[in-house]
Structure formats: structure tokens, C-alpha cells
Image (cartoon, rainbow, N blue to C red; front, side, top):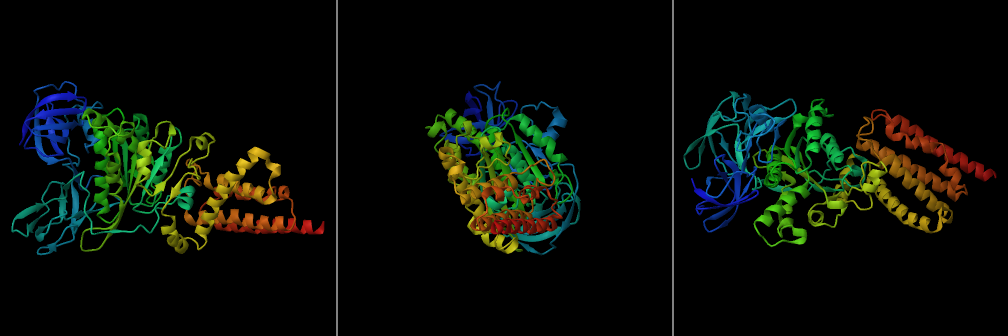
Length: 590
């Protein structure tokens, strides 16, 4: 045990001497209250420590004790439905123990030490095990089967394994290592948060993470195991987009990291998630969710740890073969914590005062996402998708955090305040946003949705781009200067925007749209366009075409129930053709 004394206190930064035998990233206890901190810099026998709690009252000469271990998380049954702070202390347990105002220095175990879990072994005496093999299972709740895995770098032979009810720290069996030593097996393992958990092989992401949000699934899809960022100014709907992703995405688990956002926003999340019903299971959404709450009024240093805590928990569930989504809100606040600590360490600042290593730290986070072949003999595959919100000041996406993120992620969902003010939600700007997974996922969409699905989505993007160009012409010379074909393009683009892209998160029938219905909605719009162009070629007036009664039917299509849209959409398609045919007949008679 290494013991030193404090030389300097500067906010969350503490400098201690006499720490020559300590290691980088060791967890330390600071002062009489034993505040939790982490060594982030070493110079000789001096250690710079970021403290994850308020440092008021600590002074020169106070004692600092190293635990000799890096900042780690506890991984085992009981993670789901829990709410943690940035260093994995259970907030509800601490509230029961000390009240609503948390006491400094309090240290509660992340996993409940009293709850019993029923363990069912999958191995027996004499079985040889390798890293990632599954000892057995615990039914954590009605949604998730928790697999108790052999920790990475562990090899040996099972010499004891029992079925029964155990606490996370109880011995469930014994393993004999290759060097002959014997160790207990428990339901819990620990893992350092700054070290990515290993896997056998990284796979190319080839299947989409379906969200039920039409603008995302159709135009800017994300793959399972992919990375995305959601930048946007205040009031543009970042939080609602993330709630929708957490609720509707076809992943097995969600890890939601509230990193430095306002306390009232995190309070809304903590209140809403337990009440939301998971549409896939009919149970509370919390049963497949881990929440990490580290709001803006909490110590700034803990923000930096919260990102790593969340993605390590997500990697643990990925290693079981599950598909996991990590939603970080927001990485801008995390970057601000890096900037503050860098300033107190007197490091050379980079652009706008952010540290020069900002990009590499962001990359360390996002590169832990991916679709992988997990450790273990059963060849199971898991996927970890990382979605980070970015809160650029004043909505300026040219600032360093957004630009550094865009160099790393493959999907950019750019939120636009002007769309939000027009009540167009999700307020994704279709001209700025992009997805680099479109080509990779096209085969999956063609095979599982419809052969022409990607053709329709490509037409959407082209039509919306043409609309933007035509609007510039309209501003200069007016609508009357446009040809009938161009006016039809504007009409179709308006239909795409209002009847397809615009979606209401608070209306049951509209908050989630399955992929077959999305394809059917696009088929209505583009069948109308094709038939309308046929009418223009026959000499029909563009005003008559735009005023066809079927226009209203297309507009109401998104409010048709998901289980009966096929019949109604087929009737609308017949109406489109019939009404255009009648219009052409009238023209030919004249």
C-alpha cells in the first residue's frame, strides 16, 4: 500500500508527493473522508490525481492512500434496472442509506451483496474452460438471461460447480488453473474501465439496427455494431431522439449515459424509463436498461469516468452474445471535463482550449463499438453500437468536438433548430446528415424488405436535394417560372417531408413504423410521382394533378394502424392510377 501527502489542491485536481511506487490510473483515497480519486499523471514521486468528489475541506499535508488497483467496474447479475453514478456507485442504495444529499466519501458496492440469484451450471467436474466460456446462467429478469462467463485470460479445469441460490460474492465452484493453483468461482467479475474487453474477431457490420424512425431507417441507417453522432443546438430534440432510439431499437440491451447534461433532463429520463413499456416484451423498459447518471452539477472529473464505465458494462453484455446500444448524452460535456482537467494540469491547449489528445480519446470510446465474435467455444456473436449526442455551442458544428467526432463515426444525424421551430420532428436535416453504412446494408434491405427499397430511399434523397436547388430558383424568379416537371418535384418533395419524414413520438401509431410499412409508404409517394409524370406527358395541367383527391389519402397513410396498412394502401394505389387515368381521359377528350 502506497501512502503519500497532498502538496496542492486545485478544484478536482490534487497533487500528492511520496507516490513513487504507485501506478498510473491507480484508484486512491484522498483525505480523512477517503474521497475516491484516480492517478492521471506521474512526475517522479509526485502524482496528479483527479478526484471524483467535491474536494472542499482537503488541504496540504492530508493523507493519500493508493489502493493499487485501477478504476474498475463490477460485472454480474444485478446490473440491469440499476441507476449508477459515473464511477458505478448505486444511487438508489446510497439514497436509502444517507438520504437524498449524498455524503462525500461514501462507497457502496455496485452489485447488491444480499440478493440471491439462482445459478444453473452449464459445465461439470473435469471440463476444461477457456476465456469467454459460459459456466452457467442466471435468469436476471423476465427479459435477459445472464451468462456467467470465464473471465478473459483465464484457463483451467472445473473441479467444482454447483446449482443453487447464491449471492454475487458466494463461491459457486472452483477452477484449477494451468499452474496448479485453485481459485473460487463467483457470479461476479471485475474489469478496468479504460481497457477494452477482448474478443476473437471483429466482423463487418452487415445488418441494420432498426429504430422504427423513418428518416433514420430509410435514409440514414446505422448498422448493429456501428457508430453515430447526433449533434444539435438546444431545443432541437436530441433527448427525444435518444429516448426513441432507447425505446424502439431492436437491440437486446441499452446503456444510457447521462454525462454532464442538466439535472432536470436526467430526472425526466429516470422518471420516464421505468414507466415506459418495452414494445417487444410488454415489460418495463428498465428491465433491459442500465442508467448512468452524472449530471452537470456533479463533480466534473466523474464525467470523464462515466463514459468508460458505461461502455465497459455494454462490452460485458456484448460478450454474452447480445446486441447492445450505448447512448451517451453528451460527449461535449465529457470533452469539457477533459478541457478543465487539462487546464489544471497546465498542459498545452489545442483548439478552443481543448487538449491536443481530444480526438484520440474520442476514438478510444467509439472504437470499442463493433460487431464481434465473442471469446468462448460456442462462437456466439455480439454487437455494440455507440451513439453519442454532441451539444455544440450555438449549434455551430464546426467546433472541435463535433469535427473530431465526425472524423471517427460513420453516421451523422444533424439536428436542425429551424426544423424544430417549424415543429418538424425528428428535426434531422436531410441535406447535412449522412450514413456511410447505406451501401453495406443495401443487400440486407433488398433481401429482407423489398428489392426496390434502396432505390426508393435513393430517390428520396435525390428529390430532396432537387427541392433545395429549386427553392433557390423560386426565391429569385417565383413559382410561375418553373416547368410542370419541376413543380411536380416540389410537390413530391413536400409529400416526402410531411407525409414520410415527419413523425410524432407521442402518437402510438406514428411513433414506430416497421420497415415493410416504410417501404409501402414510399411506394405510395413514388407511384403518385410516376403516374403524375405520365399525366404531364399527356398534357394534363399541373394544378389539376396537385389537387387530385388521392393527395389527402397519401397524407393520412402514416396514421393507418401497422397491422392493417396493407389493405388500405392497396386501395390508395388503385385510387392513384384510377384518378390519373380519368385526368388523362379528360385531357384527351378536350
